[in-house]
Image (tube, rainbow over all chains, first blue to last red):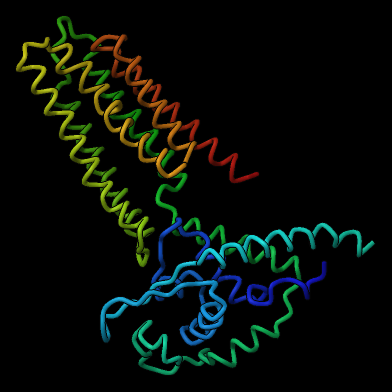
Amino acid sequence: MTAEELDPLIHAPSRLRIVATLAALSDGDTLSFSRLQELTGLTAGNLITHLRKLDDADYIHSDKSGNGRASLTSFTLTRTGRAALDDYTTALRDLLEQLPRSTT
Amino acid sequence: MSERFDTFSPPPLKPDPRETSAEAAAADEEASLDPRAAAALLDRTKRRAERLLELRPTWLTLSAAVVVLVCYGVLWVSVRDQHPYRGPTGWALGVLYGTLAIWIVVNAVVFRRATSGVGGRAARQRAIIGPGVAVIWICVYIVQGALYHAGASRAIAYGIWPAAGPLIMVGSAAAAYEAGRERAASAGLAVAAVVLGSLACFAGPRAVWGVIAVGLCALLLAATAARLGQRRT
């Protein structure tokens, strides 16, 4: 296992923040864009770009309600996304266990 | 901005100098993320999100233990020397309702902060809990009135029932809810509260307040310790 084998969709600082934040929600809960922005500390544009990538991979699901300025888009981690994060966490743990051996 | 996500937030009044969207995202892709740094970032982000989205933070459970000790303790102090038993005195009820009012406000603030921007099925379920608990609590007083109306002594109508009733009724509802959500630890705590309330009835109208004060406080402290221990592992 090498760092290159880690899921590249999650193994990027901003997307790791997004996925980890959404994973903290209770099952069935969604998070609004503004709260997600507040929790991740990302700028709106940056957040949108990363959300689009995660959405394309079916890692997150977005739901839009209302119209115009009153509209609200909220996000949740899909089963695929949750499974991908679990796999990523396991792979990362394995990689970290190997690290001391490779440095000695 | 993406066409799909153009309504996420109102457009900024001034351009944000940090706002480089696609460029920033590309830079983020290229930023080398060492496995150790990734693990630290993952852990830090998860902990922060859990803390900010936490409905029952540790300090709130700890303060619940203090509130229970104060409320039930004050009622016990007010009745412990009553012969015959008359029921909690006015000043004790004042302390009880004053403390409860502050407690409800603090809980409402924490709940509002934790659920800001949070929606979905689980959030809708939580919105039903508040009114549900309020109705159950009102029913405790309705049963109290019915008991007194049916000729029950003051020891039962103003002692044993109002002390143990809320614990048994609210605890039973909480146990069913937590079991439904497969949260064994919370369901276990609720069941323990019901058992405590039931057994405390044998202590009599005066001691029941003191037994519940100490017992429920100990249960909440044990639950907090268990949660902290679980987090460390």
